[in-house]
Image 1 (cartoon, rainbow, N blue to C red):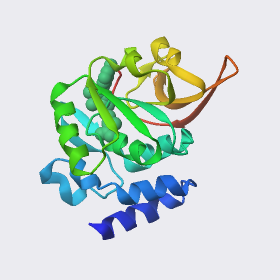
Image 2 (tube, rainbow, N blue to C red):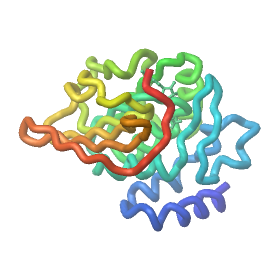
Image 3 (cartoon, protein in one colour):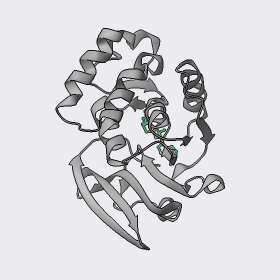
Length: 203
Ligand code: SAH
């Protein structure tokens, strides 16, 4: 498995510059987060089905989204769309605490077991509608959204950003999805539209 991790990191290195993110990709055992019958493909740079009609995202995209959040290790992070829990596990290596919300209780239950197996102790899971965020633990220094919003990012999420906070989310507009990066700065929001991506819709 370690050979798989090194190969994956070598493949991502050309596209990413944050060494902390690359180290997290190497250290988080992705095989724990994929269904047993797909373990052989766990270290390939591809999305894979995880049940409930959902997928674990492609490692390159997960790593890219982590990099855009510019985490240094002290942050409180909200992750919307737990899915397999893999993205949350990477964020947990890069920040102090991660809160991750998923609408499918079944996926959240499996993610809890995978996160425990991966030794990620600083992730708290919740089941519910992530488009409302998780006000109980707000504000967040960084928010990661792993399902595509239609045209606009839910205002409840933006409202839960801490001063100076960053939010990354796929946004669907005119038939194409792109990553949007938002940054709160002195009461203003800066927004940039970046890479084309393909995520399941945010429900
Ligand atoms: N981050 C995941 C992959 C996410 S796929 C991983 O690393 O494996 C997107 C996930 O978002 C799916 O599991 C889907 O069920 C969930 N989702 C979609 N809309 C949601 C919503 N409104 N609230 C919470 N979760 C949602």
